[in-house]
Image 1 (cartoon, helix red, strand yellow):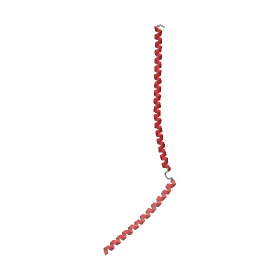
Image 2: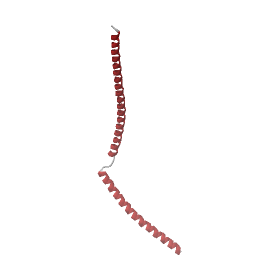
Image 3: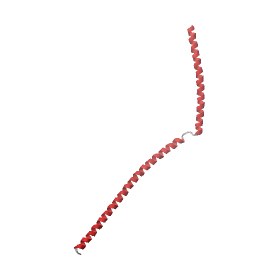
Image 4: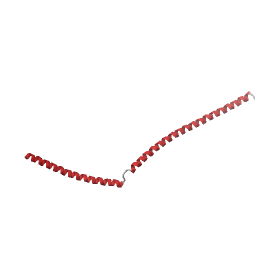
Length: 117
């Protein structure tokens, strides 16, 4: 082999080595990009699961609250009882006015009688 053949094959080897190094660099870049994306996806998945669990817990609390609330018939009964209580309160107020007027008249009569004596 002469020097020109060695220089030519050395040049070919250098080009092949450069192409191989560039190929490995591209491969490593693609893998690191994929790993970064996988990490971001994992973090987002964890956040999504945490938010979903939070929503499930709130939904369970709301369902429990709704379950213990009165329905229409119970609300109707409560309104009737409140109406009856209101009527009773009005009658008691009327009775108390009568008692107050009677006490005022008795007090006035006692004061008038004590003035005469």
